[in-house]
Length: 61
Figure (cartoon, helix red, strand yellow):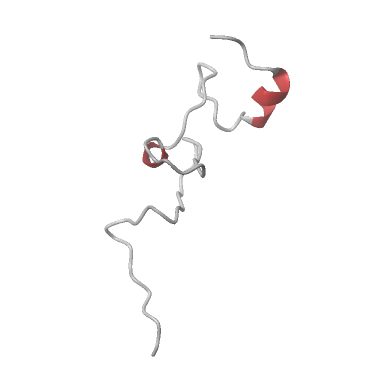
């Protein structure tokens, strides 16, 4: 595996694991969208992901 350039490594620092490889959140790994989040993120907010515990917001009509 080729080394990562210094500038690219600084850009992806939040995504790099202890082995220096890019690692994404468990929920984002198989997602096809480009809004991938780091494995370090605790709170995941994604328009495609809906938790079973999520509460629907009803509009007043």
